[in-house]
Image 1 (cartoon, rainbow, N blue to C red):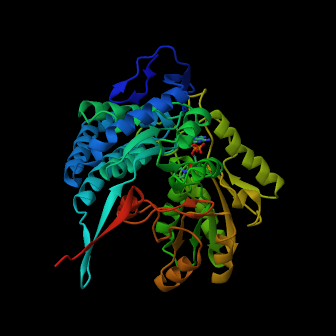
Image 2 (cartoon, helix red, strand yellow):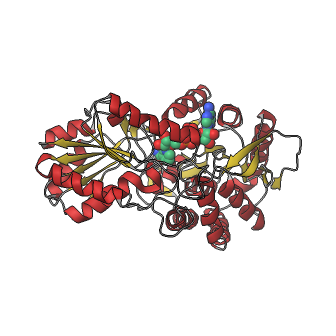
Image 3 (cartoon, rainbow, N blue to C red):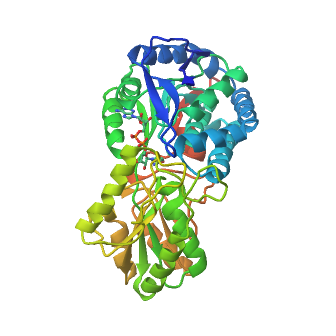
Length: 480
Ligand code: NAD
């Protein structure tokens, strides 16, 4: 059985004394590797290695660090098929998504941040008798903690700007999806990045994750994961005033007005609801439909969702893969029972069955539910699986108040021919991001993040550069 080891100070650990955590292919249920179950000593070793590497790394120019990011991007590019295969095997997602979304974006993250850090210029503000120079300095040692739904996509989104701005880091990927984090360490090792700049510890959240966040040697925490975990991370980081960014859960509305382009909207509302089996924080898991088109839209939506092909994740024609784990599948499917208790009607998805050859996996058909109150638990809590609730509305004011009636505020989408109306509604929704007539249309230069229980702070473009640095002003008085 393949064993994935920590990467600390430029070396893969050779300890056999560790406890190990088994990692499974969620589509088949079969064990695919073991990872080290790091303890506090491992965390401490990794933080020390990052601290030792800091002075030299932080003294390099932006251009020198950008060159290293490009080397890593090239290393990943040469393994693009391996990234897609490992990601599909580790997460159960369809290979087409692993290729088109995960693998491509992971490479692009390094290329993009290489480009924008190369353009950073020192700002100067002249006074009558002095000059102010504003510089961006690295923060120190960063803890980068990532979830299982987009493993390398999200890890690379943090590593690239963090080290690009001169920090050194300790990564803690999800224990459920360690494969591509290990691949990134192999690439980093192959390109001979100076030892200690990027370190990685495997392990669970309770010991390795919380040990890392609370470690005195950590100056910055970038966390992506669930809201409840985010609360623990925030409490622990705040005690020692660590710089912190939290990207947490979401419950996003897809708002469909009667004047939308019906065919395009249907396709994209299905994509927003069910891409990656609904396991994306940005997924539109509540669809709000203007009452005059409700019945027709519902009928067409159910037909489209019934037509989605669930099957072998490695088959290029598969559209729906497996959920990440048995525990998660049980949690997601418990919402179907809850929906029935809450008075909902299941329009599709109750049929059971697993693809042939994948009987041990964590499968679930895409589900659409109607008839629930917009205040019901199913309609307001994050489910993070292939379940979409549908609701009708009659006025702009009503749909705004429905969209705002959750504890989350991450994203959403609006579908209409009237762009003025769409912008008016978008501005009234309390969230970090809204797409109009599109969904998950990402420009890496724009801010990404949420409000309310969806998190704190923004990453993306210059917002990542700001988060992964400290801005300092140096004022020089003229002496003449
Ligand atoms: P999770 O919170 O269970 O785990 C995320 C990471 O935190 C894992 O690496 C885990 O080991 C670690 N962890 C667990 N307990 C910890 C602790 N006490 N201290 C420090 N680290 C700890 O989340 P998950 O189930 O892996 O991911 C799903 C969640 O992530 C969903 O809620 C989803 O919405 C959210 N998510 C948000 C975004 C975003 O950008 N807002 C993106 C992707 C996923």
